[in-house]
Image 1: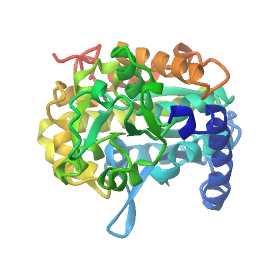
Image 2: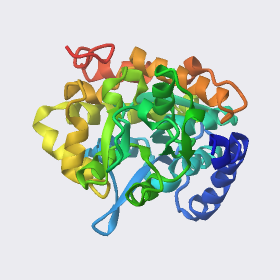
Image 3: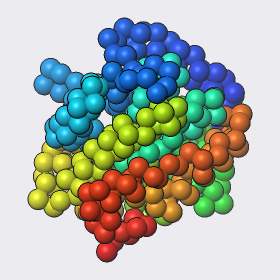
Image 4: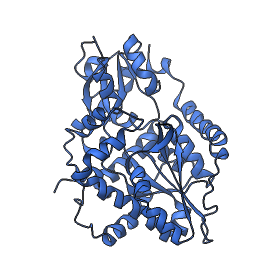
Length: 371
């Protein structure tokens, strides 16, 4: 059975994503009491709205990572209040994160969002103007796991086997790069398009032989369901899955002062997280509602990135190369119809100013490498 036997064409996947954008927005964002800044004009802004993935934890929705630190520090809330604006964080479920955030940007209900590279690229190609105003660290590792009992030690051993890969999600690109690097192609495998939440059961039942996952790859290994045979820890830095702080371009251009405050808050949060004294708390917060602490710690470990650099907001060459790769891949695979200008996507002026204002110009290496 071939790859095409398993899936609808990619044009159908694109259409499905567009439909999901609209449906998820109608069901969720329309029901929110959140209102953004409207047209993004020079009129007074009453709210600055940031959307991000949130997780249910102890009866409430919590924001992990830098978003959680920005909320905890309260600096941004206080600075915006001085300008007569309220800070609003909009929680988004990971199941519908990209489509929901894209629709929020399209409807000008949100001004900023921390989310992944693929959905942002799809939004740009669809005519939603966005800018990356701050990188969010050094990226997230992707894992290739093989079900327990299968004697496969490398990607080549999986030729003809069933691999779970949720299409159109950020981890598709690193896997494609791995396939290309080994002189193989996707048609050499039986790709099964299933959600990561269903993947452990599929591995355990033998419905699939391998899977491409994020840190949940370490979790299925811990549970004895599968073994990790490769990860982006072994690959170039630009292969990692990335998420950044994106801003709606019209808002950014109309309100550079407010954008500067938002970016400075994230740089402050990054500097706090980069302090080794806060390592345990960072890991604890990152795990809330998402993953066991030991899995988060293991994911952070052995990545060849020193702790401080893990949170670098610098627009390194790896960031720029990564978004060129995403734009090229999405176009080549039919996920988008219009080429995205990756260089125009990047707006580094706010990070540069924040580093100067906070006297952090020398805190992180300028190209994301260790000091």
